[in-house]
Length: 320
Image (cartoon, rainbow, N blue to C red; front, side, top):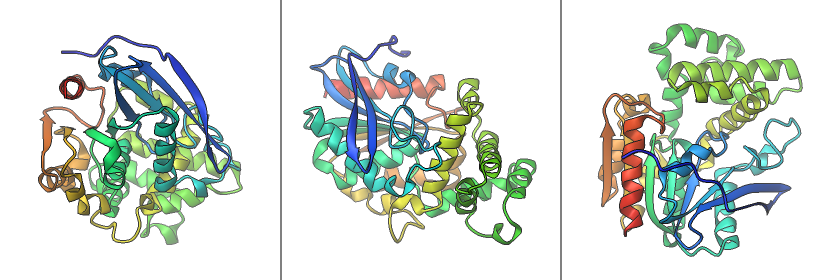
């Protein structure tokens, strides 16, 4: 099946969403097509032109944005005095609603990868009338136990990398919340320590989530590296701002709220997040959902088999 050809935005802008934040957005494809919102991962990765190619530009009005603090949105999380207290799941969902109203869209398909899948799921659960379908990959729910797996549990599979990851954390904090510990390091007034912590965090992510060179190369950009590490640890260290009861997962608990929303989840069989069985549990708790497992694929949405399944899903929903 393959990806659609590269397409350029026909419109873009900076939306003032309050709290001193301006969010970058762009629209591609057919201005009169079916609206589709694309939610990038991270948190803090920023959007990618690649994601436009998962949609038929004749059928869809494709909307991408850089979430607060990332990409072209301002202020950027890499800037030390950027106020991260106004960068939470609730704030970002409010931004999505502000953008939807700004663009005059009633309902839209929501696509999300990795953290974007969490955000898309929670957005659909709390704003069901505006989400027509969900297409998700690298599926997660941001439950506390998922963060524990990524920051500590996978240390058993990658012991050498985990030893390096742990070395920067003060000894008295090594048995606690490692994401929160790293966030404290990244928020340090010492710029050298902040940079060491950002590098150590992205080295750990590279070790546990095999990714193509294009993804790993981003971490060589000091601005991207700092903004990404600061945002991820801010969210990971605060239960993704999903509230009490998130150990097993607020998103998973509220899966029945998705009953009337069709959805497709495309998951690589080698995605290490699968070790908790979250995507299977979500599939069975979400009536009407479809789960497509791609063999020999990991977490990356750019893997050929994963990309093919994602395009098949957006093509099918374009006709709906």
